[in-house]
Amino acid sequence: MSSIVLFGPPGAGKGTQAERITISTGLPQVSTGDMLRAAVKQKTPTGLEAKGYMDAGLLVPDSIIIDLIRERILLPDAKNGVMFDGFPRTIPQAEALSEITNVSHVIAIEVPDERIVDRICGRYSCGDCGLVFHEIFNPVPTSGCECGTFTEKRRADDNKETVQSRLAAYHEQTSPLAEWYESRGIFHRIDGDREINSISEDILLALAK
Ligand code: AMP
Image 1 (tube, protein in one colour):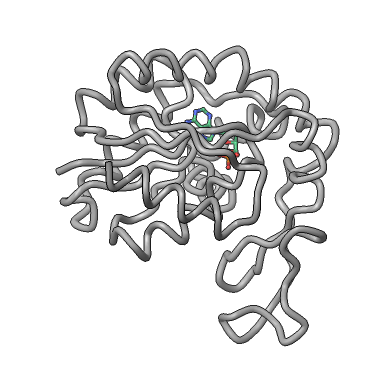
Image 2 (tube, helix red, strand yellow):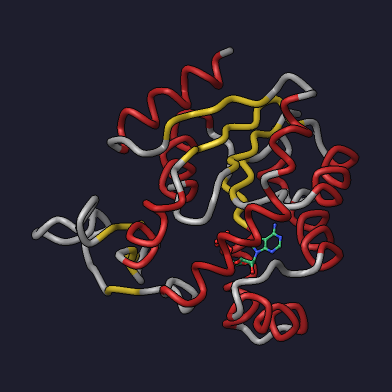
């Protein structure tokens, strides 16, 4: 069993690429952000604890995240590995992960800070199937979403105020992980400031290495 980590700042396109790579690799997408948003919506104890951190653009404590992952990895669809999207985000999370599953590739989607705000603030998704779009870079087709219907949904934390804290958390707590994984020889840098299909192609090439 071997898993993949999609690594990068908020708004780098990890979720969009995860949806595509899942089709090619068959590995299920495991997004801690999606899991936390579901917990917030359902008002579970985890959701109630996580909400304040998420609204402020701060990282949720490691213990909560690691517990979520430990449970998720036990589900039958994870038996051949998974594709992590937005996890790990700290060194303690990466250390915990190394005891839970083997990671074969870390795909770092790189986008400069100055592009992040526009990318995040123009982002929306289909409330019915979850597919992610962008007002300028990837608008929903005039014929609607590929799921057949379309209701526009925006994330509560996709706003100018929160994005700065999310970027700061990324630089302070998450980016040190690049070196951690680089020293393990499994880190692949991908230029994420390009057309979506070119990025997917490069990711698939990196995964074949
Ligand atoms: P995301 O959807 O990955 O952008 O995550 C949204 C928010 O959920 C983040 O700003 C954090 O507050 C929280 N979050 C998601 N994944 C993690 C993680 N691995 N560690 C800590 N907090 C996380």
